[in-house]
Length: 270
Image (cartoon, rainbow, N blue to C red; front, side):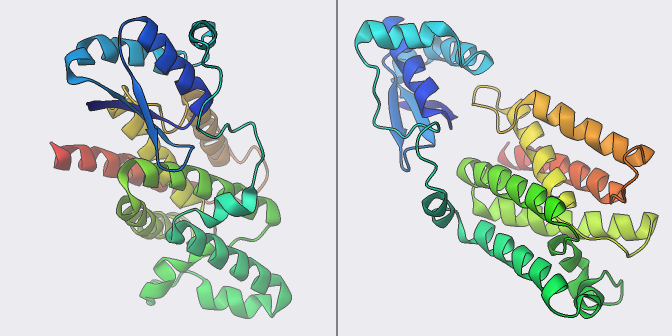
């Protein structure tokens, strides 16, 4: 058996497997957690399976997949459906420790900025070219609840997808390098008055974007419309049309760093 693709949509991929079987391809679904599903087929059926999988990736919600499930009498699956109970606490607990660590640290720092003397905390974590520890710390410091929620939501969402696809070591590498690059870029182009995980988030975006293009036989880590929205948001940031202070250079260099890391990973595997 060989792996032809993965999906984080158990409901849709179940229908695809049923459709494949009606086309003469015996697809087998495997999952360790009930959410992230691997699709395996016999080696002898690989040439027939790859076009079918690409067709599914292009349009996973095509009615023919649900129809195939009805025809086979298989409308249930052993996997969990995303439309079911959220179980947020359980799902958070199952995340990799690095994702949870960054999440908790960012929350604690945000709380300290408002509970204790905010200026003291800010002075301690503010970027300082003479202090290597502060080359990373601004990424964990947020100045508004909306900024914090937006960044942490993307951190957990994209970070978890990347860990499942390429492993935690790659995510840690992306975090460290993109934090350094984006923080230094913002400091050099503007000044040291900035903070937030946005540079890292854009690095995850860039990595997921390039990785998905490189592995188009697998389900995309991030959809193209989302990439388009985030790029437009970044461009608008440079125009100051929103009349809010944004670390635009951190966003740009974070994005470029993530894209470069994805390209280098591809070259390394080759």
